[in-house]
Structures are given as C-alpha cells and as structure tokens.
Length: 121
Image (cartoon, rainbow, N blue to C red; front, side, top):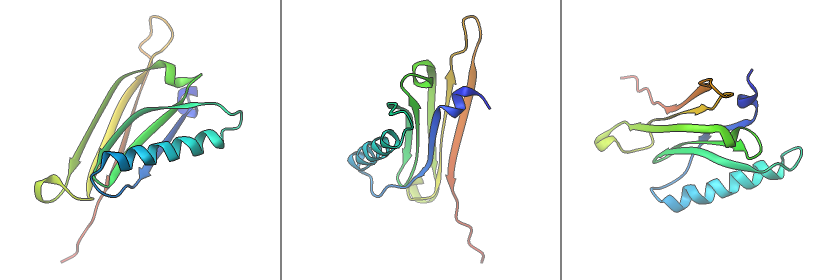
C-alpha cells in the first residue's frame, strides 16, 4: 500500500440533508475537527476534494505535512437518478493525482460513491 493512501482519510459515506451549501460546510468542519482531535500525533489535515449530489457526498482529506502538499489534477463529477437527476440516489466520484518524485508522473487515485435502490416489481 502506498504511503499516499495511508496518509489519506477517505470519508465516502457522509450523508447530508437538504440542498444547502452550509450543511456540507458545517459537516466538513465537524469531520475535520474529529480527524484532527483523534490524530495520533496531533497532525493537521486539509480537505483535498469534495463532491456533493444532494444526499450523497464524498470528501477526501490529507495530512498537511504529507500527501496534501502533493495533490494535483483534482477532478470531480456526479450523476443523479430520477426526475431531473435530483434526489438521494445516484453517484459521486473524484480523481486526483499525487505528484511523484521529480521526473515521474506519480499515482492517480479514483474514488466513487454510489447509492442504489432496487425495486422488485
């Protein structure tokens, strides 16, 4: 397992209510405070990327003195399911690259979070 992955905290199931940006920002502050409160050596962390689709969110944090300094090429996307692609079903995804040593490409990480509902009729 790469050191970049070990230094990345993935919270792939942060469910939030409503359409408000303030809700996710408040949740982000709470999650970040809890990560830092329980960090073994009191390290500080940064939100590397986030993507939200109504009730489905994907947030990735990295240690400030580690992987967070080397994140680049962040891409996020989402898709909904249902009328107007709204609702609490669908998927969110992100991809980012961790820079490698000089003259190397580094490593690319991709995360996807989906919520599905199967109805048997």
